[in-house]
Image 1 (cartoon, one colour):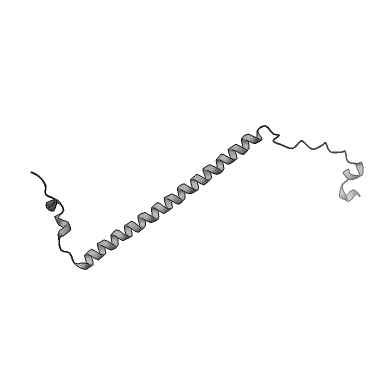
Image 2 (cartoon, one colour):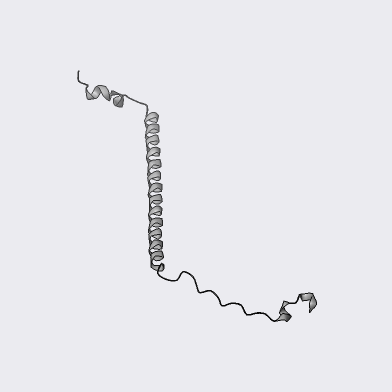
Length: 93
């Protein structure tokens, strides 16, 4: 009970009007174009993620280099006391 190629795919050899064939061909072409656009978008997204990963690695390397260094500037010196004349309100001058 073998299946012959012609029996399974006999629908491929049926005569169809030209407009039906062209519509099917256009639909297949549109699907191929959409697939190509989607693959290109996915590739750009993957490239963007790879660039972000490289950036994060470089930031991690810089942070590791900075761990031995001082993170902050030394605190400013204490403020000098102001003279009493400066402590008056503006309307008292």
